Image (cartoon, rainbow, N blue to C red; front, side):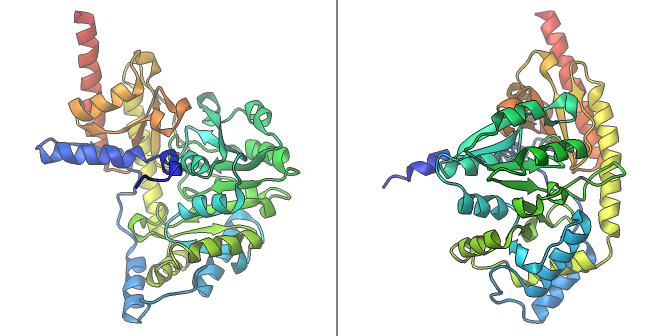
Length: 395
């Protein structure tokens, strides 16, 4: 029995492949600094954990409504209305086990074979994976380092066609840590407002930013709330990756369609995790603030260290917890460097090319690790790079 042809169009997340390779090296006794996985290294806030325990004790261990518990959807709607400055009701909200279903379900509901989808490149690999899986045409738009890893707007406009049915935005962004400036968000909104398409705005890192002003959601632009799917969740903001708790905010017709897909796949999101999420939204936000402050401290020290390595340049990220380092000046391929850093220096990181064609020549590091480990990684990378230089000079 052969797999269906469409399975060949599914891509993988290389972070998990590298993690597996790193674990294998550790099993051989090698010390590895893990900077490959995008996962906060903090504990879930205590009051959130206690809410889940209480929910279990109270019997919330059974099926719940497919789109989510009513009180949780209402709380999400209020939170999104407040943070994005738009009017959202519970009917616009669907709660899912993690954020990825809000990529999968809306694309499944909206895209036909041959439709075109514009998405950022380098970008989260699942965008391209799902576009291709559904038989639509991926249209990658390069992110420009000189623009803080935002789109070249002329290239973006030139790639809009009558077949464009979706535009994917991600800010703060994985893998670059870049934020799309407010004026660029406004320009994208102006370009698509009167077109027959939807925008999937991946805002999973919306609370992890380092400037004074929060990232701008395209849903807040005039006329865009009814054309936007907001993807957000609890994994990054509240260090709840293993809880699998995400949500989408979208026009009601699309939320109903996504609900049908959910009935046919996962039925519902675990009820006790939803009550934990409710506690996260309604409870104190001190842990979020402390985590962001620590991420900023790590970012500053880690990026400064990387920028001292000859041939390496790290644009200072404005959000998320990734450093996306330009290594083109070294004259070596980014995959070659990433593999060598794992095998020879004991630093697990990702080749930028695993995030798309325009990521080649870059290395992605997650600084969701202790400052001590980050500085250990910088020392190892510096030593490895110095040895490479000596070896080249000797030859």
